[in-house]
Image (cartoon, rainbow, N blue to C red; front, side, top):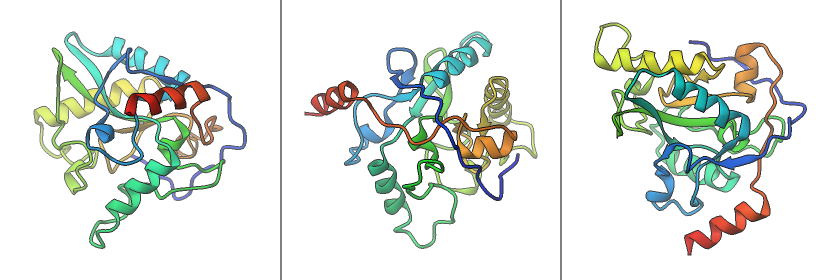
Length: 212
């Protein structure tokens, strides 16, 4: 698993909109249910990411499906999560990206090209060795590679299905996958396509109303 020493700036956004995938996938809305201040109703991803995830679902063995923890984040939510996590001086770097005001080098989730997810089996979401946002060494994607186990087989199944649709996995978090982002561009040696993304007025207004 590769982690680049530097991210490749995305010089031009492809223009794909953010779309709410709540009606397409099982979405757990992890941060909204945990009552984070800047969370909102709905799970948003770039339209192209949605279509790739549909293709991933089609590749999975019978009974398995994707379950999404989190997708696009507003800059405010990214900042809130980062500063809360790194209020702990003992937390190692790398679990949450710092906020970025650079359109060409956005925090991964702010681009809409990053998704946190797991597998379900017959409708039950699975913990692949750790819970979501478990900031420990066992959250690393390869943490269970030394010995054959159900966790290793399930993590491999997820990664292989996602790789088949050109996603890259973050080696520190088994649930974190990216497409079209600066990290993706650096690893794949291709041009990135997603800069910072924003909800349109209808999405923004609808989400705010749903929270009241």
